[in-house]
Length: 409
Ligand SMILES: CC(C)(COP(=O)(O)OP(=O)(O)OC[C@H]1O[C@@H](n2cnc3c(N)ncnc32)[C@H](O)[C@@H]1OP(=O)(O)O)[C@@H](O)C(=O)NCCC(=O)NCCS
Picture 1 (cartoon, rainbow, N blue to C red):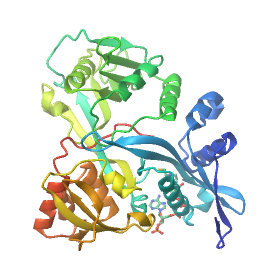
Picture 2 (cartoon, rainbow, N blue to C red):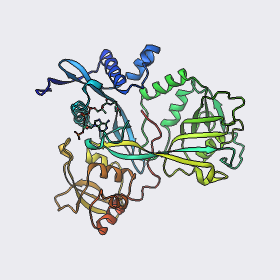
Picture 3 (spheres, protein in one colour):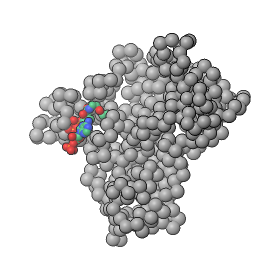
Picture 4 (cartoon, helix red, strand yellow):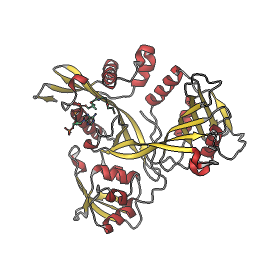
């Protein structure tokens, strides 16, 4: 593909050298990402393995990249659809704002759709970049700061089913536990090899100690919690000893309460930071003093973009008595454009007159349960009368817990 405007070419960078080149370009654009390869070439190779970078060349020089790893994402009700985890999006600072990212991101979406991915998803360095490509905010997160000194603890319970494990050596066990989670929240991602590789690398290189516990008898663990110590001038005498939770996976509510009870019961610690939790997390409902938890930092978490609208919508179920006909326009993937009907039977194309138009973003947010139709209508992002908005809520509502993934990539 060549753009006559400024001799622009798009090429796959699928071999080892290409992947390293693409990652270097991304690091150059991002400034704050370390050179893993310089520390450990094998770690970098494992991290880049499985990715499919695409490069944008101007006059034969690589000036922009996008990458993606195959995974899957859960929808309300526990169904999963294939998900291209888009990452390493970067353009040379010397070539920014000339349309390179737009070309690469659009091309990546078309290729992913042709390869059969149902959605693409990413984490954004800035919340203003990706809406224009049809990505919607499928989940939000908040940060919790728990003050253990002032009642941020659970009622004491001795749990013989919790045991400490080595935070670095136990990655195979963590992975096994994460993959067995029976009913993950919507927006939970299947974690791919490279994701585990980079967690392992970061843990191995960490400047402060990392720790981990698992819950459940050996061989039938039901959750784990990984955490690290926040750097402190003098850990021994500090009155602000803080630990940061890196990752928590719990198969059920009891496992979650057990792991939270454990981390919030540490006498040596004054404060626990949970950097990414669901917006409807129940921690404030279970600690001694709900005011001991400060909830801040509301963040867009998962940005998701349907590629195959029919497969995406049919990855979840709808209200039994639902029936709503809407139209969608997709300027990048034309097969999504058209009129659709959603009912208790599922989602399919329709010849009927649409009752309203939905943007891809609004549809994604509804389908993940990130927003209700009523909230979208209140914000002006859905235009329809009360009756139509109520019927949309009937169709897409009843999602239970809010979507949340808990991981970045
Ligand atoms: C973000 C980045 C990839 C955009 O690349 P780019 O080639 O400059 O983007 P384009 O020229 O194709 O811009 C496409 C549109 O996005 C907008 N845009 C680009 N970067 C933006 C930013 N950081 N914030 C808001 N809007 C942005 C442009 O204004 C343009 O808008 P338009 O459609 O209204 O014309 C590039 O600036 C970059 O490498 N940034 C640093 C690394 C980074 O943040 N990567 C993203 C990681 S998730």
